[in-house]
Amino acid sequence: MKKESSKEAIRKELQELGSSLGAVDSTPGFRVPDAYFDQLPNTIQEKVLEKTSPSAFNLPFLVYRRLVPVMAVLLLLAGIAFSLFMMRSEGIRDQLATDQLDAELEYFAYRTSMDHDLLYDLVLESDLTADELLFGLEPGIAEGENGYDEIMEMMFEDARYYGIESSYLLSSLD
Amino acid sequence: MRQYTDEELLAMFFEGDNPNYAFSLIVRKYQEPVYWHVRRLVISHDDANDIVQDVFVKAWKALGKFRKDSALYTWIYRIATNEAFSFLNKKKRRYMLPLVDVSKQLEETLEADVYYQGSEMEKKIQTAILSLPEKQRAVFNLRYYDEMKYEDMAKILDTSVGALKASYHHAVKKIEQSVHGD
Image 1 (tube, one colour):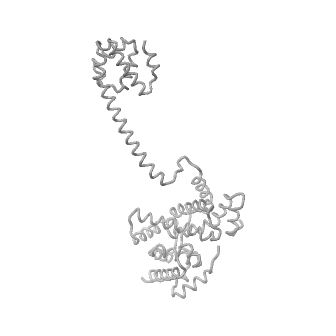
Image 2 (image 1 turned 90 degrees about the vertical axis):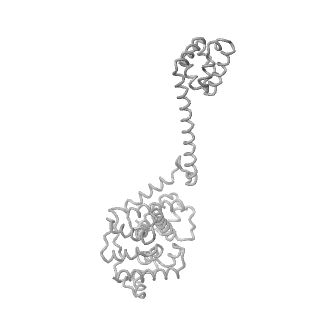
Image 3 (image 1 turned 120 degrees about the vertical axis):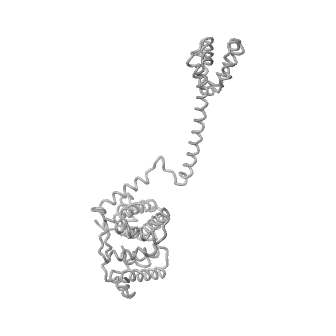
């Protein structure tokens, strides 16, 4: 390392300034743990490798800073949507629990030779309200050709919406 | 181990087969002066240890763009000084501390540091140094402890030689007053 002056030159400069600091031993008394400087190069090498190796999360800081609030908002929206869905499902579930609707569903399943549990699940996942179901499943309407077709159409539509194959739905119908 | 010159180290890094090895030699050459420079500014060993590691990580990342007409020695010292100042500024902002309180906190760190074993006189000098403004502290340390040329200090601190001399002289007067004044 290049140095303009030895300790002597610095002392001389201090003397010229009228300071006695030049006469003091300039070792400041700081210490390091044993073998610190033997280990430091390896620690630095590891840190260099860690900081420069490609990572899945190796995004620039600014991207991170923008991504975090966006992700938080998306998570919040997803949470709200999920809560609404659960509230609605719970509402229908409660309504399905009424004896009248359950009996209607059982009857409809019997009439169409459809699996009762599958019908129950489809109704739970559908957008149909309890009133629509009760109206659609009225024996008189369901028995009539139009009523049956209407309900089947609604169910197929809902099944498509929820990604249930029409063929799977048909296979469960006799 | 043979001590390479900066020019040799840079040639090994840019033209050799193994830049990692060349960089490890740069670390070995500069780890101690950089550590002591940072340690005198931030006082705590743990803080200095973290900062020195960051200094060399930054140096590694930026060395590819290093302009060979400047000196490696002052370039590394410049990174180290900036990292230490930035650490102290963060500390100030985090605790919303005015300058006086930062000095006080550094004094407390010095008192509590198990890796500080200075004599009473050394402690007095360190305490007096800690009462100086940050940049003046760096000027005093670089001149008094590192015995650095004003021209090199000018490159590190981005200040004219005249201003550095004036700053050093002021610092010496203040320390003198503080050590012998009471």
